[in-house]
Each structure stands twice: as structure tokens, then as C-alpha cells.
Image (cartoon, rainbow, N blue to C red; front, top):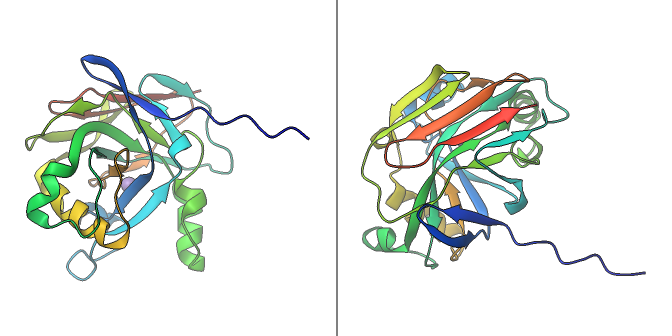
Length: 223
Ligand code: MN
């Protein structure tokens, strides 16, 4: 029997240049904005942010129309800053963390909220709530540093999430330092850095847009 063909590499288009950024792994931060932690039933004063993952081939580029995912009737948007790692390392000191960043993008951590609620109730993993096909929406990648700015999500033009990146509980350097104590970060890794309050459903036929000051938007339409 013939072996399957080698899968095509997952890459991200880059703002202002023709080269593409090769995606290695996708890490995500949970409960990194205090108000969102509270809306999910958590207590940000007692519980630190934490990590989960998505497969690299969950990436879908901005502008796509995707099918409504199977096995859910409560697909939610989560507007997030995505950090692209350009230089790997383990146990990265906080002061060195910015030098490991290649660039940034706007992202949407699409979530089967009903499946996640069932997993939480049964104390089971979140994988099928978070790591499904087309669940990692990413806008054009921008090289270089990113100052503090606004992060906003709209569904068919109605604002659902609005916050500042500086509202994060763990800053981007703190996320990189912390994550690199669990795994050795590598060039090509992406980190979804958590979502502000206001997560909610996207229905069939609706368009969801994540905007972050200084970055290209991450736009998705559900078929
Ligand atoms: Mn998220």
C-alpha cells in the first residue's frame, strides 16, 4: 500500500513581504483577562492563566468562509493577540523574552462552547472544544514589536469584545517565560494570548472580525 503524501506545510502570509512564516505548533493561554475569567466562572485572584494547544493545521487565514463546525450548536468567537516566535529556547528569562518574538497577528480562537462546558463538567480534556478544523483564525502576520493598543471583536458589525492588550493578566513576555518552562519553544510556534470579556456566538451566515491596533484584521465568515 502506498504511503500517504507528505502534508503541505502550514504557513502564514506576512504583511509587506512575499515570504511566508512557517507554523510549527499552536499554544493558547486560557483566562488571561480578569473579566473574561469571571464570565467563565473563574476567580482571577485565585487562579493563574494556563495553557492548552491546537493543531497547526487548524489554521485558517483571514478572509475565508468556513463551514459551521460539526458537533456544536454554540460556536463562540474569542478575539486574541497572536504572537509568532522567531527564536526558540527553554527557561527563557523574562528580560530576554521580547528577543524571541518574530511578530504579531490578530486571531480568533474559535471555540465549541457547549463541548467545552461538557468537558469541564466531566473533568475531561478540552481538545475537541478547541482544536477542531478551521478553529485558529489568523490575520496577516506583522514583523516587529507591538505597542499597547485596543483589541476589538465585531459580529456583523456589532461590537462584542473591546479591551486593551495591557489588560492581560500575564503580559506577552511573561507568557513566553512561563510557557518555556513547560516546553522548549521553537521558531515557528504561535501563541494565542487569551481573550477579553464578551465572548459569544457566531451564527451561520455571520461575519466575525477581530481588530488590533497596528495589525491587519482577522475576518471569518460562517457558511
Ligand atoms: Mn482563547
